[in-house]
Length: 357
Image (cartoon, rainbow, N blue to C red; front, side, top):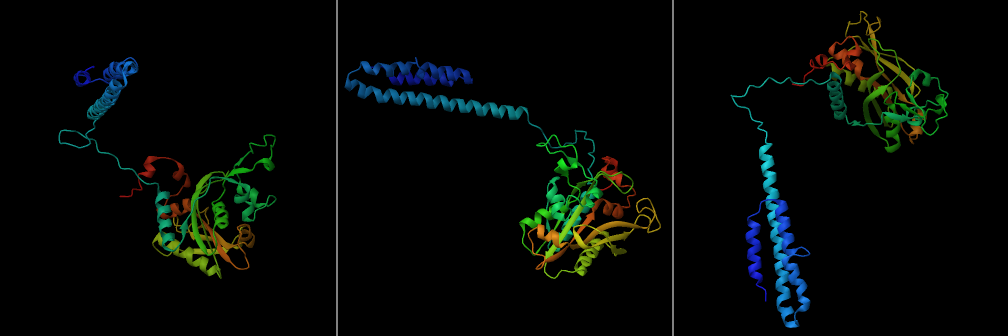
């Protein structure tokens, strides 16, 4: 009979002397590989008589399992040691000592529009409004048709829209084949929200919008709006004016002079323009207010019945108001910025003026 204990001790002696993964794998193969020492012993079982096979077989299999387990344990130890060694070599000391010369880091600044948006969201949340979001690339239905702006409506020309050609209709060359667009207002979020909510509800929807406009001191092609909607029963223009005055007072930390005048918007009836006395020139006239002393800030009105129907809401049972707040112009009034193009300039010197701390 072969001395299995001797084979075991020989294997352990060789194993403990190795510290490389490849060497351990070779040693393992030497003992339990296809032609290994233990494997050959197991092959010899067929030549033994039943009694010898019964006595030798289990012990040989135990030795095979033992060798495999010990090899795996040793491989794990080496792997852990290599990981710890690499971590120690790559360690970065993030502490500062008196012997290290460290340049003062420049603190970043929040974009003023971000500060205003966060402040307005907090104000509306305190009044029970939700904050929603929606896609920048929109379809005709949610951007126009659901908002009472059909294909032949003149308001579509007013939007100066950035259209995409329908990829499934490459032959289309005119606007009739352009089904996708960069949203021209955040009112598309209103259309989507009404289809998924049941009255009463109230929400705001801040976001970037896109229009093909000529840029000047008060107009940009990419700017930010904050849309709002409240739908329920027995809502009046008085409710609309209350919320608008409240939000402006909270933002400017004082009562500001406003005026409400008739305005046409397809998705509201009646519609209004809420203007604010220009805070840049105090109403004397400047490039921001186009020399008239007032700045258009809050288009608003009572939600048109057709818009409620498109959202699956019965206009005979519910009504509401909607408004669109120009965040860029609000930022200009708040901080006394005389050109909207500063907001999109990406100039870090401009942003550094508006620090959170």
